[in-house]
Length: 447
Ligand code: XUL
Image (cartoon, rainbow, N blue to C red; front, side, top):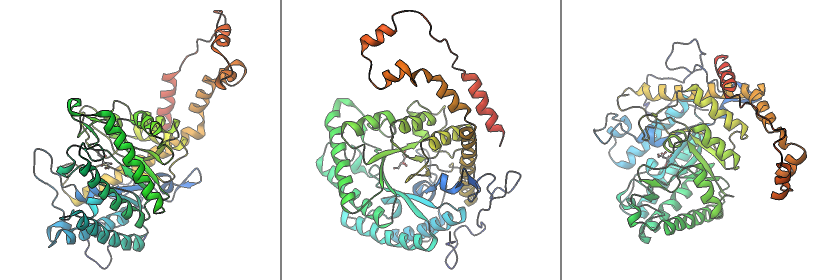
């Protein structure tokens, strides 16, 4: 990957290319476990993990929260004369960051890349101009677009939703934005396109026609898919589940809900799931559960890598730091076949009081190291075969005889009742949960 800062203004002047120095290093600006070129099971770490940087959290978020003013005065915005100039400076800062960190992918919303104009046509023009500039920088560095998306939740026009808005004109404005965002994604060779339905839900059922809104959402997604395919887009569409926030209830509640929705409306051929750790937690699940559920239905796609604060109950979008969680996540991901078009996108923001420019690097370094450890542990868990061997044995009674016939749908309820008509031999076998948890801990410590 070529560096980007050479020959233009450097936004992170005291920080060079982040090296891999190994677990004994004291250098906060070095990887301890993420060694991009190291092969795990015949594949490089970087190709397993496919790290992406979320443009919005890293280059747009300014540290403000509902209680306080910005704390991150971005240098790329301060000295710009127009919003378009600021957007180009931000692009330079972003590509400098991607290349110094060694992240090969990024993700954006339309409004992260280019400012909204005074009309839909001007907004689209702004996006086209910045898309061309992003393309030049992608070509110069080799950085790629993991997925693009449209911000259909920030502007007041979307306060009642976008595709599920009760006013058709707002839905059409959302479609106008999605069309332009799809064009930008395609022009940049994006490998996917994500729909996170931030306001596609309700605040009160007393004013909501739930069935009609879900029908509209499905039609909207289908038309977006058809348009993109017509333009030659071969990538995957992702739905990103989240149960609530900013709405009281979001229609894309969790993996199981989205899977049911996609299948009910016949969208499951083109759409997969983009699963976020913090959203899983808000839905009352753990990350591992959501990944495993998507994989079981053949709908696993991509990941928004972050973590929540379990006792908070809102979307804190913190950088991942738990080896336990990333080991289980990578275990599910590897067993699902790994990433194809998807990757690990850091939907995480540095804290409001993380005010040094090095903090953005240290946050990503920690997140990448945490997933690298998870990858190592997961790979060893799989090659050790102890967990999968246990599970295989646990279901062995379905591998042959009547159990296998049952799985193939060859037994009626009468047949089953006949087989179950005496209290004879049946196994009281231990689930061995504690032993399996101990094995997992052994693998975690062996790194
Ligand atoms: C919001 C969220 C978004 C999506 C993209 O909770 O995660 O950043 O990932 O719109």
